[in-house]
Length: 385
Ligand code: PMP
Image (cartoon, rainbow, N blue to C red; front, side):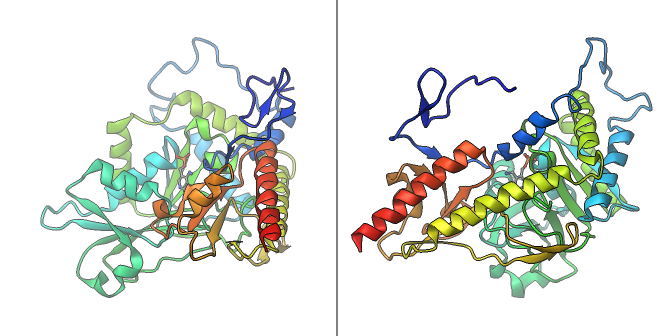
């Protein structure tokens, strides 16, 4: 079993078994610990032991910084799920999707000093796109906000459009918006796995980014990969990795190899079945709790056919994108905070403050506490009527 080391903020007492009534429920971070029970069940087969002498070198035995065996394993995982075409494409590893996003922006931006590439995304977008691009203050690219501002001008300048599908925060399956030969796209497919969305067809984009964080839940291993069509772009990303970190930790690569073996074990469906069942149940409980509310609403998602499970499936998004409907509730984040729920403010996603993102991917305890608070919120509303 898994030892209890510290209590969740909402539990106290000697065994963390006492539920506290006045605690802050954290629905802010997207830490995907909902998959922990699957890994507890598969503890033995997913373990690795690394002796002191093992993996000391910079290089693998073939002289590379990337495990060929792991690359092959990743191709198998995609083939099994049918979410991305990898044939004939290059694969590169990074310290999470976070590092790969920057490597990709670097690789796709114009290196001609006369023009600055505009980095854009459709609102609501994952906040890191803006934060990261602004933080690195490059002369080659600048963050330029929402794609809708640029539809007409896409001809005059070079663009990088970040496309997140399904989208963080609202779970929408998205396509690129800007259409021009000057627009390069980065497809962030972090959530394009059966836990979170129906799989429609294998994605076949020029540059696709995935992360272990959302596939197996091992966010702390800091492992992601990009699948790249064009060799020159791949080479530029490799240079970025060489000069920033000299590649991903070799121990991490070893651990990922082991984890993916478990993912592919047997019929290779067990983790996804567990993941989807968990997320679907959370979405249905949350939707039910909010169905009578006039003050709060969440995004509408329809059941859709999933080519992986070969059936029409109920929605199972990673986040709820909540809207405060009342005119006076201008900051939904503040409204929820007054009810002891911390979400992530809509303004960070380039959206209105009357939106807030609630994370549904944490542990079952975290979700139960969130639901308890939401139920209180809705019953307060009813007693006000
Ligand atoms: N892209 C999206 C859309 C995400 O939501 C996240 C994680 N929250 C990332 C990238 C970064 O993931 P990683 O842990 O691999 O850096």
